[in-house]
Amino acid sequence: MNPSPQRGHLFTYLQEHYNSEPEYLWENTPQAAVFRHPASRKWFALFLEIPADRLGLAGEELVQILNVKCDPILIGALREEPGFFPAYHMNKSTWVTILLDAQVTNEQVIPLLEESYDSVTPKRNKRHSEPHGSGVDKCGEKEYSI
Image (cartoon, rainbow, N blue to C red; front, side, top):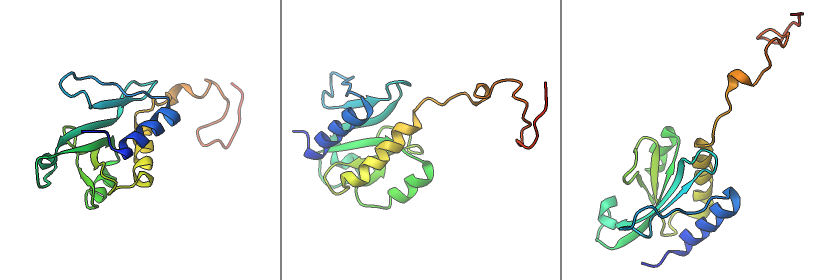
């Protein structure tokens, strides 16, 4: 199966906006591509081709999908929309599958890619973000000498 124009557009978007390159990790599925966050090395997007019936769709033809990490509350609402499915081969409580057949537009997909990317961005350690002995109490109301 040839890559869909939507898949190509999303690859370009990820490369240009996140400086992330596709990785092809499995010999037996050469079209499967993983995008990782450059700093954390965690996956935030997974492109696959799978038989349509694996998503509960009629037929066995191959379809192109995208898995993204997503807020669990949002997943339930998305799965009610056409083109969104329980995550294929991923944790269904934190990932969602998007059918790449242009039914779900790039304008809908890109914010989900952004959320997925943000969810794997390394977090700063808040305990070390303020210098010790700053002289301000936790409420920030009074200053005192240490």
